[in-house]
Length: 585
Image (cartoon, rainbow, N blue to C red; front, side, top):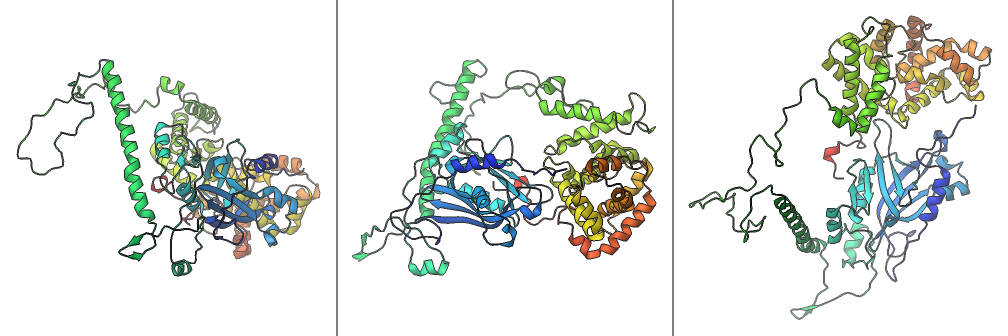
């Protein structure tokens, strides 16, 4: 069976089309210095990152590494990504493929959005989407740098976080009135890229300072204004900090005016509907200029206080309706809310279909209207909104069922399940990155401890090891009896010999049946059917004994075959993962 190539979001045709749109070249200044020998005159490299990689297929050997740059010229910002040439990582890259994947000077005026992906395990990557809707292949940052990339972009173009998805950053989005006002401020380092490019400002710095900092300053205008002061010629120094302060003070008056006018209009519209008392015609709705400050410590004389026109009964809201009582324990989302909440209805439907088919042969879950089945449903529904990005996927009910069986408490079961999903959650990612990393590690372990079996799989197009998918996804839950499943999980969760002992369990089972697999010349479909039929027939004691022996024999060589961050390892805080509320962007 031929293995399909996996493209994350865009195929080569889309990429080629996007290349045509992003092939605009950068304009050059009439005169000035080069910030780099390979960059156009007047251009400045404001961001540079090595080892930024694309994954054209699922095979690590076919990954293409290169250098990502953000280049500023005038008021325009461009992005380039050039594959390395002559390095071992790109040895198989033809000149045709090199030209196909190269990103040459794409202006950010052609960019619609940047989507950031931060998987629980693995590398961060971004996807740049053009205004046409086409997207470049995902750019993987092996050494971090996504946050710095976005910060640099924000310094030079108008960049806002999407209200619908916190990991999507929008470019040139002026639909919101406030965003239009902010974009009109044209503050330095934050101007809209939709505006007309202007000539860059010359910065007069001494040559010694330039050499000391090791930087070349692009100068497009050789002349400088040199006024006379006290009879001496002095070079006019451009102070960016002072300019920013002045422009902020001047321009932000527009924001104040916008807020005042909008709020005044709101009050007038509300007043016209008869919901508020009439104010004095000589007093503006928001005119508090003559009102004494509340922050003063000494108040020798108290002036008469004007009645608050917004005062209303504590039990009613602005529109006069009484407040509803707090939600009770039995109420979640009302039927009226559910009608307007598509995601809730979809997840609730999936969960209800799965829980009625989960371990119903056990007395703990059998029978109609079983309260434990209802608890299983409620915990999964709660988790799907506790971890909204991951949501619910088929197989999660198999992982929760033994936990609820043991804990017999909804709250404790929920938090145990949360802790388990911190490790196994990547198994259910939509891009299947967690599963692919484990299957890749499994193939390397088989190659290490049983190379003939590995070569057999390679010759019969079974090298993706997808026949072991169910084993890894739900930790052999459907391969063993219920009590044996819980025993196996206790062994795996100790992490005594390895966090990845479950992979050695897979190897042990495959080695146990290697004679039958190779003797009967099983192809992928036959092998998949054979593996699925092993359910209920695996000797757990013998398998654990063999898995532990294989783990000990493989030793450090085996551990080295497993990429860092492969589930169920917890993600390592190496600067790639940031809490949402602490981010600048």
